Length: 297
Image 1 (tube, rainbow, N blue to C red):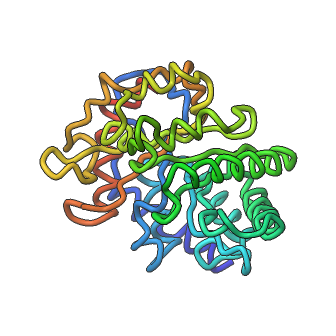
Image 2 (spheres, one colour):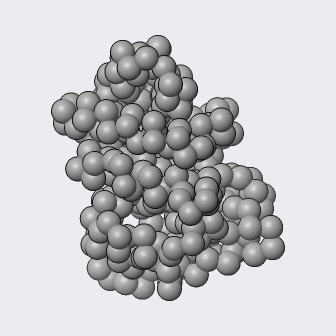
Image 3 (tube, rainbow, N blue to C red):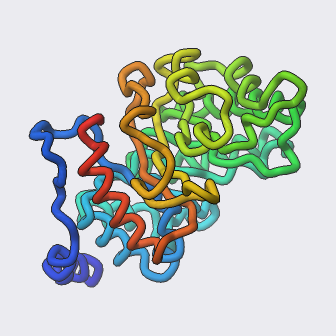
């Protein structure tokens, strides 16, 4: 009762502070929900997860990508998974994907990995997610030989997750595009993983930052596989993250064709380098996105 009362009591106050849910001149309803990777506001989520989610919802974000699931406690941001699901429902939010901590299991015994994947599946199903996503590879694992091990593990996880009725995806950063004498880690992932088991979450910022191929060129190599995107901008001088519209990435020209990519979900994200703070950044990015980019999706 306390949680539901909190949600209801502050909704009017927040609505007066937030931007309208639709800033675009396009009269058509967007095909996709506007998504937010919660890692963007990780500092706010640590201090006040419920209040932070309320702000995101009032800004017009509809779908979330989670991070930091505690598999031992079965919690998201300190809430049991079932309770967190109730919070999302109260705020009319969904969580279609989640980033889970797979990297430490790259070289652990397979039975340990399988148990961890089972725990992730339980947490994902509690929120009615569509995808479980591998988000990161530790620096010590970024050799070509380790990418071959990674690809094998991705196939195993993909098979296990698919059998459980969910989708599995891999998220790129910059290091996958490092050239190792004519081959990259991403080349190995694309070559050695089964497209029916391992989908791809394209981080458009990192592709523009480090890949020799454009997003459209990558999609052309394996159309239909890039089921999720991360959309964020690049600072014009430092090439660090920045708020949408403040950087050097012209999404009006590089945004890939969603249908050809196989897009199902996208998430706005900013990993840091906030002009003011993380909440102001998701506010500014939402404003820009809805005015200039949402009609493409």
